Image (cartoon, rainbow, N blue to C red; front, side, top):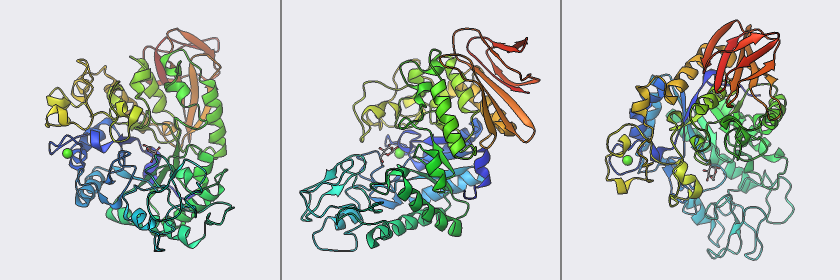
Length: 513
Ligand code: GLC
Ligand code: CA
């Protein structure tokens, strides 16, 4: 495993969807200057690092995940100079910034793709995955065909306007399938390094990597893609040893082998993550099951050498807002979980105030059902909730218009608010090493269809027992550990008798043992 920058050990991330965070020039779209102005807010919450969704030039057919220039900030967000200023302002505050790297595909408008579409052979002919006949389609997500004089179909990665970059096939079978070390695949890999070099030299601290597990084609167990990332890691170790790498992969045993420092548990893949937050009976809404999640978690944890590098996000720009599924004080208990697990926690902007999923919106920039989780941040009671002074119709996405929509301002003034609780929980995490990323975890009670959930976190000689009961009933469990000191509690206190610990309904507690 590669060296890990020290700051990651105790990082708490805040994910910013730049178009919806803070607009400073009244065009209805968030911008980099807006992020700079809100750094103190994020720091005050206790977050030490930020992941910004793609902010590069793009036709925005997938909200920026369709890049047309990797080395240029999209004019609607500002300039490269603004981004550099953001890096500096963050560093002044002891914070770190990850950019979103989209290595798997570009926009159809990327100059590489325009060249690649040409019938005449040129430098970019093999930059993407093409078959050698328009009548043959590559296997996978689909293809782009009949779009130019080039006689071939181009593989796509996500939407059909996102042509797949060529990193080769793990085991090429057909004549047009290139190997990982072919000239074309090697050139793509080197071009990716150039992009990383560009931003890292400017002061960015690392990357969240989009669809990191999907680069090498016909690579079922990910062996080729792991190898590719090891090559990238080698380059980083040489030139930017402090760069942090977090993958959107969802299989930590693979991504960590590939040299990533951390991976996410995601709404897709085998993690059972959403058994907890987003399903017909979410565990944290008080009537679900946590046992499958725990089983899977332990499996990944063991396979990644108990390193505690699996990040559990409160949500992200691709899934329903947490608040759609988890209500009232149960949200606080969900955060007591998110902020006491190994790996760096990721808080999706607005989740700290319980921003809602806004139903019934028309899709914006390829958001479709995801659009309702991407609405503008609600700062205060001024016009457009302080997000922008543009006329309401100009806002990037319509805002939550319900009269009781939560705002930062109201919650900062209320010690019982979700935001106050999240802030408190982050502070407790930061004061106790056992609760941080690398602390060990052992599950004490995680039975099928049962409450509470209890686990022991430990580091050096510190041991902390976490007990979470988001159900509507008082519950108890057998436990040999004896709490000696409360370091956090919500909703009452735990009682110990005859080797059993009892806790009230809607309760969360952290105890030294
Ligand atoms: C990732 C992103 C998502 C995007 C997709 C294609 O899953 O999180 O928003 O649409 O990749 O790049
Ligand atoms: Ca703006």
